[in-house]
Image (cartoon, rainbow, N blue to C red; front, side, top):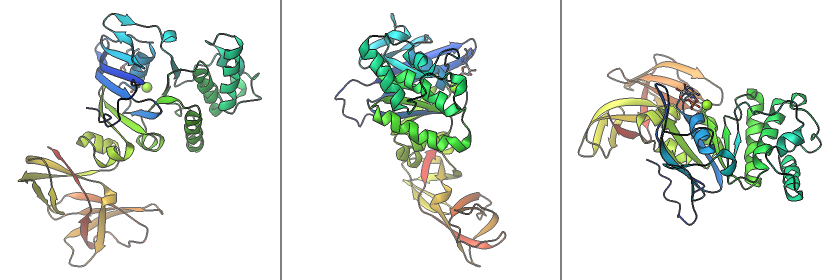
Length: 346
Ligand code: ADP
Ligand code: MG
């Protein structure tokens, strides 16, 4: 169910995975996993912990063999019924979650690992170190570097052999929250400068939306939706994706002839029968009025905005995100206005 097909198929996909199944004993890590990655740009694979993100990267890179399914890289099959190319023949660079640097090797030797040492390759090693901003630190050991610098060594090592695609498994999970924003922007700049095709894994929805050109959402071992960040957020494929990608409240309703009536208005819907109406807090305004039919039950003030919880006639609770200027207090009566909503079959 990927929606990436709007790109013209002028060149082979960087990665084309179809129907991957991978089990560990009773656990099914990948369950009909399919993904298209177009050349250029950053695709983020996001999903809750344990949904199979790391396994999918390891299968694509060649560190695990799936029970079923195929993987093509730049039009060449690397995993198939009778095919299983070893990692070193796939032209895939991988940055592991724990960086996996060799502790007894210098920065330069870590980056050169896996790159033969003719002149051309030596130049690539030097260029990669420069690209990630570690020039001058070539002789340091990993233990003499900060977490952010170690991550850059891992990135330089993955870039040095000039891979077709680079896979990064939760590259920020070992960094302090205070460093993350900057390192994230730097990483993005480096990947753009290197003109790399990158698949970046995270369990953090905000990070996924902020980092990427395309986002693929994973749930229970498969990709359930792939689209641009804005498309995913505004047109999620189902209620699970909607709730995973941001704050959302759901009102049950009954659709008839393309419409559904709710306590906060009537909405158009392509569905019929029992449905849910998904509303994001930022699409709701709250208007104080003694005649209003809703009641404020809670308010959390964050400064840049506030989250106001209101109780609708009939008892449904909805959250509204408002600017700091809206002044309301619990038990106050208000009108609730909904700007937009998305409906799903119940
Ligand atoms: P994620 O990276 O999204 O957190 P993983 O791909 O690491 O998820 O794991 C997916 C599922 O497969 C989990 O249930 C996990 O426990 C299981 N799993 C992953 N690797 C192994 C392994 N080597 N042995 C047994 N189970 C594993
Ligand atoms: Mg993982």
